[in-house]
Length: 163
Image (cartoon, rainbow, N blue to C red; front, side, top):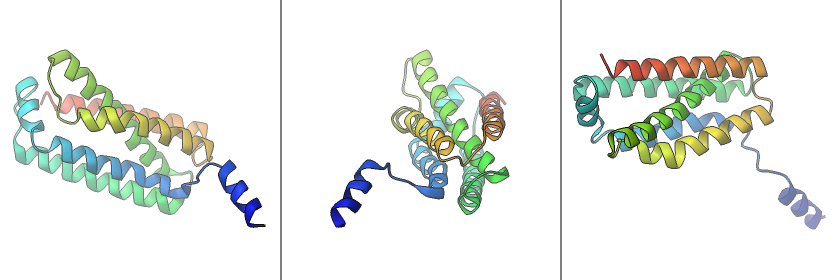
């Protein structure tokens, strides 16, 4: 009996359940830790002047939002506004990863955040999207809405660098 149980466990993929929605918040904390020491100076050199305070306020508010939507999506488990927003946040993180890697290539220097973006942001976003779709936690229509929101958030974040 135990052998059959172990065989069944080995053939089925690990299920994260609604815990999958903790991924955006967890990733973002790691990403902030990489950006925090030098992003303001780097962004001020390549875009508009940034203060440490404005960067800190932006990061705190964004983290609070991501924590909220991750928690509420976790509670919901599947479908609806909170799930859409959690998926949108992760889509934005995937696009943010592309931004970091492109600016590193464009400016031929380290872009603060590019290590977590390249090593974690892109693969985690791909994993996250595959899992929420495969586990039917989001419909095709909801996914399209989340992608549109994620693109809008990423675009606004990049535009804010010029202000």
